[in-house]
Image (tube, rainbow, N blue to C red; front, side):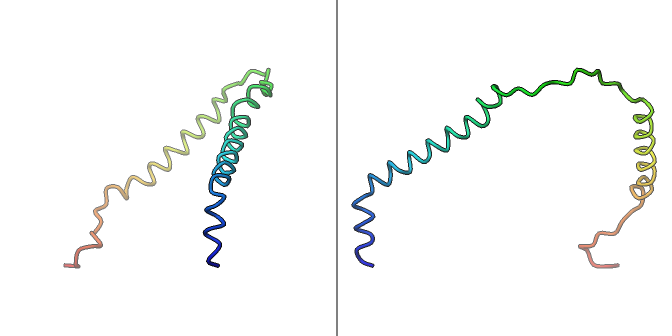
Length: 87
């Protein structure tokens, strides 16, 4: 057990080179995944035109307004502070 630190220290330069090489390889892999491969393999865009669905939009707005009205009375209500003693 006493010889382990000496064995590690004697190859410290080799270990540092190994860790730098591993770091460079990981960096190159990440660069390739997020930069190079995205530019090489561009996905095809849809050729269809997107139509705005006005009826769905109105339904979502109506549901949102109903939810806002349901929450409104609770905003006007005065709530007691739970961190103060009861009167």
